[in-house]
Image 1 (cartoon, rainbow, N blue to C red):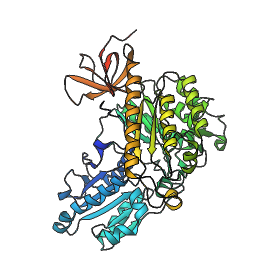
Image 2 (image 1 turned 60 degrees about the vertical axis):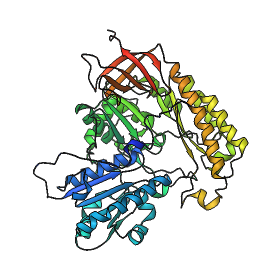
Image 3 (image 1 turned 90 degrees about the horizontal axis):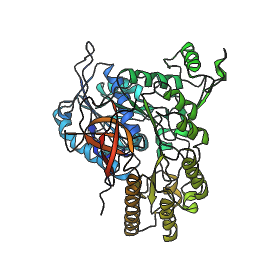
Image 4 (image 1 turned 180 degrees about the vertical axis):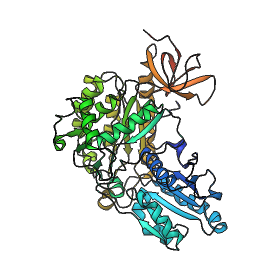
Length: 506
């Protein structure tokens, strides 16, 4: 069987439980050490950067050793069952540290914290602080409450909080790629998903704060940003929507809008007339600098527009790669999932991508064994995979999550053995398609952003192509991480292209 290694995984298994270590902020050290580790998706790791920024500003130092920490935080995920189990097991490991240090503060942050709330305080006696995704500004106050002998909980969801004014500390960064959160929450009530209940309603960041963050990152040497949101296509901002804490002045907004040009909005003295959608935002970020690559995740099939596709086509530095979760290839199952599109609508969006951006790579999410899924409906998913021929796929068996609409409405009635067998078929099909898609690029030259040395050898560099495929090639004089290289693709595996640097064309 081919070894399918999927890059840029939504839940990057190599990063689960990753702890951060940062340089202390001179003149602010209060003598207390913070240990924070993260689980789940890219949004969670981005949130940990926000938490670190808030607490470093209050004088905390970070440590990679929880046994010497004064405060331990776990940033959690509720999407997958194994993530929850990992967190519970990890909390048990912190018990020894708590016994040795009675003043130790242990907190659970993020989606799992919001969903389980008081259960953590009741069942996990170790836990002192429970904080939801919208309450990170309150962390210093909550730690103070614990220091005074109280338990502390803040899981209130917000309709305004976007943390737009906080410049995140970049955790364990390579200094080249960075995540930039453009919105929080989700209004899509997919029946299998807990995100709307744990992260609240959608709210979009002021686009000018996003442009400012991306500009700052570029000036610091970063060369790729990934714009993050549960559904980036539904991004929408009007002047007046921004949080009162926003650090961008009206004058800066007007200047930024003028810089971007009339494609973004009619700029007048009345800034309330300015409205920015996702296609506009993409262009604003692309115009920061031609050398700044722009990616985004995740798109929703019901919302991705031709305007977005033409914007991607227009700018060379917007990567030709779209993550477009299908979940199922069958319309009845999609309706049960409350995905608000059917098979034909999804195919229409794929056809639009292929027509407008022929070279675009497409990846997807697939859930197999959803409630009442028949064998024929499973075959519809396989036939959808054959139609699209995805470059990558993130493939899961359905796992019922407490509190979701599916858990309340439908029986999880597909036997585990059937789920396993269907997943094996889906994985095997995707292996074939991934290999086919990469084989088509053999003999072409790809522009690659060098990210660092290959995992297997310091004699090879690795980086990603415009289409998000991993490329490995020999270290070459005059090239270093953070630079672009034109790489001629000589061969490929099921997940990696292998080639050599060719001279830059004038």
